[in-house]
Image 1: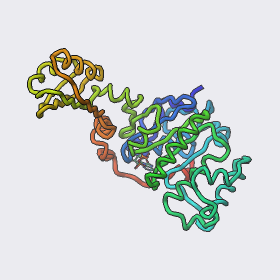
Image 2: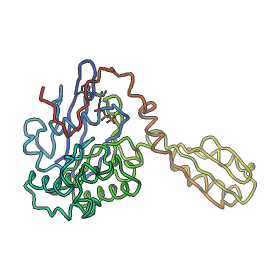
Image 3: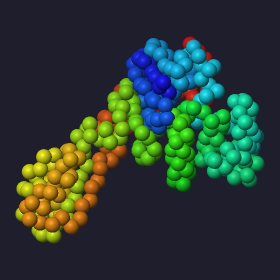
Image 4: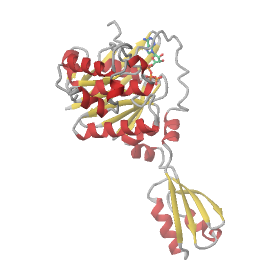
Length: 326
Ligand SMILES: Nc1ncnc2c1ncn2[C@@H]1O[C@H](COP(=O)(O)OP(=O)(O)OP(=O)(O)O)[C@@H](O)[C@H]1O
């Protein structure tokens, strides 16, 4: 059974198609990164999965249940970290966790949950209204983890976290996945997605423009990346030998160094062999894969332009705020 499956899922706001005919399957136990520039439709998709907003067309199942007709069966098994999570300012962190435990009728130990998300006993005793953004994010994550959900849906989980917190979040996501939890998280911070996801889907202007592993995506846009080879001899005499290798393009020479663009990952070994055959010794090799940043830019035509879309934005509800069913 797929953890999430959408078929032709579409959301229209007036003339704006926020999510356009989305077909997506996420398997159980997978860590899936849902990537896209601002306004791409990530939160709208999440809101439809959680029945916070109704699709204009298409359907979705979550943990085998229809996201709209059987939402009551889904919610106890899903942990949600909404974008822009609203805290109750006067309640302590601990009380928030206790509240989540009561609501989900779970048996978690609040202290264990707080520890898991890196909130100390002192922090937990303070009103959440005094928390920093990162502490609020930790608290929201703790609330999402209550009840050992089968599916974690996280909207921008690293928002507000410092580098240490981001690493902890990544470890937490991986350890949840190791226990069989499916993790679906949206982000536009590419490195975070790269660090933890089995696969990513890239949404652009409401349309799914790619779904693959990061490696697969790199290959699909032509491998990419560069290789720098430092030789024992002056590199100029070996430019042609390496340039003749299939999958190597744009060779530039500087002293004993050759820098090659890689169009096919298999060309890396081929280049080293060709240089050896040509009679020189390769002293050092540095490979730089195409960055996820440039991959993202390629897939989203710049990535920073939610424009081209209608501007009749009214409100963009956070996942925490269910929209009145239309
Ligand atoms: N309630 C609403 N009414 C009108 N338009 C909306 C509403 N909610 C979202 N939209 C529009 O739908 C599009 C997708 O928004 P969404 O919040 O899903 O994007 P996102 O990918 O989550 O963006 P971000 O990364 O900035 O959070 C945007 O153009 C947004 O303005």
